[in-house]
Length: 426
Image (cartoon, rainbow, N blue to C red; front, side, top):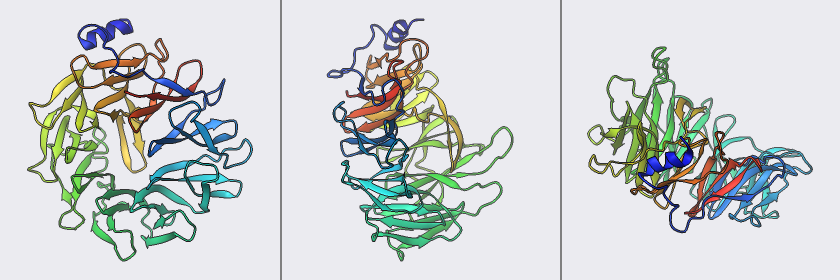
């Protein structure tokens, strides 16, 4: 069936037009003519997109305001054609923090988006960066928690966790939660004395640590691996919650036979939505408030308070009630596989994750001939192909979707310019 015919079936009639005011996705800039610049590490800082791309000076730091003229290399950190390979790009109170390698080594950098305002903080080794109370927090290579205000003097250790390397961190209100090692959950106010152990979750051969720290409704939720229970059901996960105390840290619910496969944790409507045992659930942190909403699976997306999720017959939306759970479109997000250093592999949507903007959901779909960008606003006939960027069976394979203000940036290959940066604005 041709793409037009498929789209006609999906929308129940004529091909739905783009949302009013939308011009469809547009190429932002051909950064590396005749080759792919392969933009990656997209992050929003205010209304500016920062990312890395391979240009004439190797892979360096770039920024974009959505226009060709406003898409420029910020700084050639490693002079010449060698790459500085920026990583861990993070918005910290309106300043970009990131790691990069210059001719002297790898260190922590900050940028305000200008060349003179892109500076080396110091040559330190570190893990992923988390913004908390206006400063950058990160794990050191020897199990310490560090913080930085963007100056060398203000880059200091906060707490030494010994041999327990820091995994993930998550901000919940005015507290920073830290997963250290495979069994320690810590909470911090950003000071040494205020960084304390919440609970030790005993490690056993059938309990392989915890991960996927998520803030929802003023509580922390996280997943705990139960290990490989058998050859058919490996990497089973439990849902846990914490209020920052040992007594308030507990498993949320047993979802049936123990093979829960909890995943797709998303905060929306003041509570947590997630998938487990083939269903979409909602929870406020207790077994009694954890209720099945509908059958379905991931991805789960919060688009302006509207929760979208996937079922076998396409995308659905919900307000958390059975009556408020309705079918949106037959178009289904493109699947891939996610593997995480702190999580098992799941069939989800790595690099193809849907995003929400102004109540709409944008998602790559293989509904037509090849993977292209689709849009739904959850209304009747409101789902449509945003643009057939690379006509034919290959498709442009949109990836790295990132919301910046009221627009969505992503990477795609139109078969002419290679994989470059694109933008969609409803």
